[in-house]
Image (cartoon, rainbow, N blue to C red; front, side):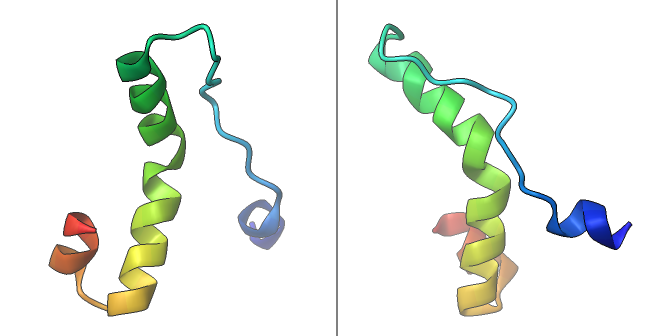
Length: 53
């Protein structure tokens, strides 16, 4: 279980330059939203502020 936690994570969604701007943004959000939320929560220690960030 600990090995899974520390394994290198790769996003399941691929982002291509051929996508239009909206689809590319949505793909990036799907790929990174969990990590970005965790980082924001780590910075501010408040779930509501972390969601806003």
